[in-house]
Image 1 (spheres, rainbow, N blue to C red):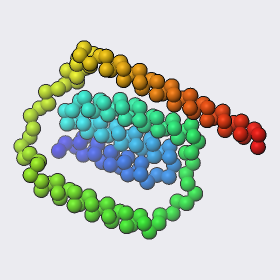
Image 2: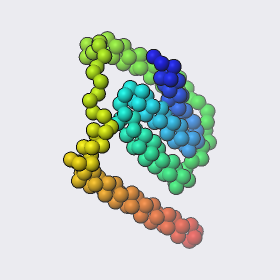
Image 3: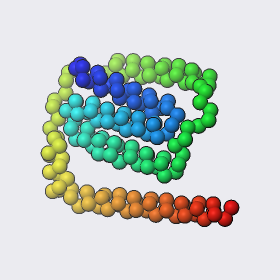
Image 4: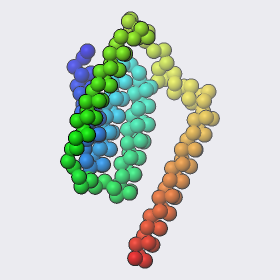
Amino acid sequence: MSIFFILTAIVTLFAAASAMSLRNLVHCALALAVSFTGIAALYLQLDAQFVGFAEILVYVGAIAILIVFAILLTRSGEAPENSVLTSGWMAGIAISAMVFTLLGWAVLNSSAIPKENPPAPVATVKNVGDALMTKFVLPLEIIGLVLTAAMIGAVIIALKESSKSETAGRES
């Protein structure tokens, strides 16, 4: 293993653990974006360029930013008042460690895992891009229109809810 892979894996795991354990929702969302970026870097190191770039575009560029905007628009980014770890944390950590160990043992001892290296992938980013822009251009455009309509609908719903809450606040 290369040192870059190990460092990327450590940063990704630390960011994922931070996304689960931080109390501020904005910090959790930003740690999740770092974790998504680390996963994309791991894919790129494995010569899966399409999956790596799709991870960056879809998860880092869309999902993580959407989560940050949702948190900021709903103004629920404040930390909860009870920040004390309960006794359930230790039980949860112990159970998750046992499940992780059991799954790791099952995967490593599975006969489904090939013992030799797989061949290099044939589908490159250029091949996928050529297919999307020639053979599958109509479905790509339709998906773009559907996603745009969904985003416009979400903005309209958010505007209606904010105007209702403003009028309710004025009447009180």
